[in-house]
Image 1 (cartoon, rainbow over the protein chains, first blue to last red):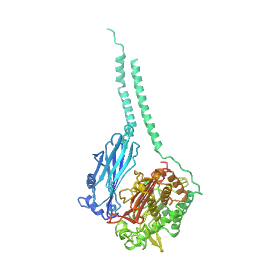
Image 2: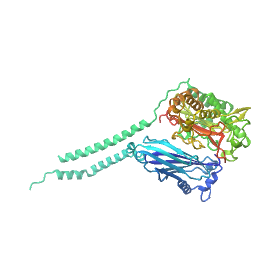
Image 3: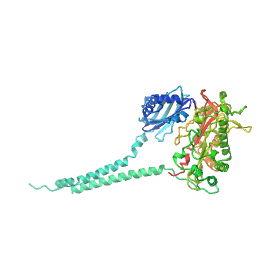
Image 4: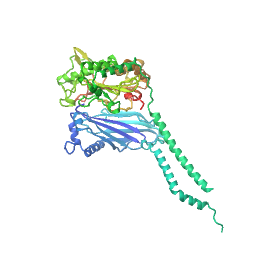
Length: 209
Length: 392
């Protein structure tokens, strides 16, 4: 698509929140316009601060709601193509967004997503990824005719979700155990003499009056 | 006595802590073992499809000098496996040796390998896609559509194929980046009856990735596309993806009103959802489940899927079709667009081990879809690049 700005969103539901991957690909005929928007100072280069500013602008154009309440999305990853790739029409800007919020209690829930970024150029795709946990099941999906908006119905199994440990911390438990063990040993070694003395004093029979 | 109790208590605490740590570590190790894909590979024989493909691959390598072999032979790693695209080769460089740089004998050996690894109809499809790119290269202003186009081939609004601007998209018409010479052949890993390796063949609008693991041959992910999707060659009308188009329209028109209500999406899909670079993802399925189709419609769905599956050699395709048939109750068919053959429509077939998307690309400026510029993708979410077979 040469004269359009393809904006593909993929939505992933997880016990800890919602992740959205945005892949923005300007066609060769609109790449210059998009590049000019990003290159705010017009020096022909895209600096990290310009990347960040553009990503935040996109973020402002995205609306996410869970059960009718706005969920705040944060940028967790930003990847920009080279100027050459973008000029040739095969450079995709990738933005990773996340809303670290609980998806709610057991039962049915609703999520809505809307992309209002550059509608005069945009062609949109929006899809939900199959959840990687059986704790969440998508039961319905609806879109507008242009795929700028998507509404997801999903079911949360709280019985399981209450036992879910966030993936990021799951691997830390054994190390926490090792740390506690080391601390105990260190305490035992360093304080052993005092402990023995203390115990001796406490256990030793008191001289009779 | 009290001292003994305290010391015993401390020892017990240390032992329990150590036990807890060991238990957690063992649990994690067992989880990792469970998630690792099981190796379920039958060894290959010289007489089976793998054996013949390995022999043809080695025969091709034997036609090359040392520098040529080095160019063709690449590591079997993620970086190289994922280097494929629908874009012209000037925009996304491919692995391996360029057909246009090969001698006559080398090129013949390369095509003989493709003829061995693929089916007869699969090779024909590949050749037609390459010839289409030759038409795109040589047609001034993007011509190539013959008069009196058959169903499924009419360019809407007089749209000519290959609306690629000069200087854009890798050079435009007449660019050296287009044409039948600009397809690349690579081996990732060494051709082997036992060890995993891969044949990668592709260029503009074509990516064929065949992973060979023992007796198993896997052709996912692959991307057969076409622009122009209809052209004349030696007086004959050629439609590289014509059967896919016609079978899909036949299927959607075989559905009754209630089935169509389920199958037809209420929104436009103007690009592949899981195209190049979208490995390892599974989208929530939509449309109508094959369990809601009658037997004839189910057979039509299988025939349609076979257009992709059957690109690979008959032995491997038969095994894959059996798997798809077994998963048919959990397979979905979704359609976006009108039902009149000759217009452009997107469709998707999605099952536990299958994803096929057929995506006509947008016409510049009109907002409609182009019957003459088609991208498709064929994936297996459980076994792209043979990852379900290769023990990692």
